[in-house]
Image 1 (cartoon, helix red, strand yellow):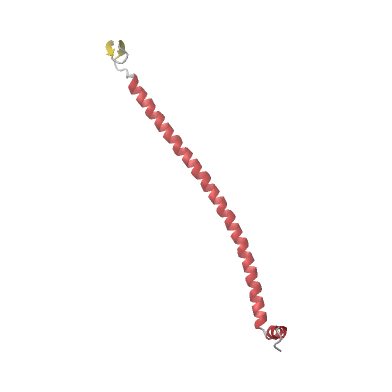
Image 2 (tube, rainbow, N blue to C red):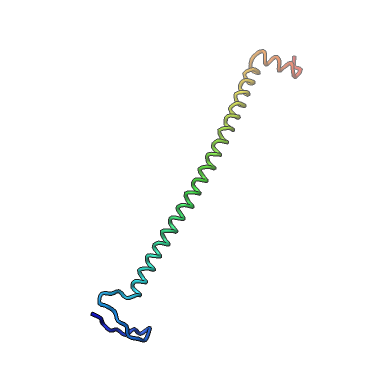
Length: 105
């Protein structure tokens, strides 16, 4: 069954079947779906950028950790050397050699 309706925007009479949706309602749903799609794309892009930033930070922390391990090994070697030197200077032979070196004998 066809029903005659006057369309004020166009100024002419149009026909529409019963149960058919008006074009504006369909357009609104299309706009809503497009908005949801754009929002999902924005969230995905933000997640990708955040993940890449996180991976960069992990790489930086790994490099810093490696540098600290090397520095720690160097400081540990220096500490061991200083302990050995201290033990030598505390010994009777080391103390006498040190005093002779500075002219106290």
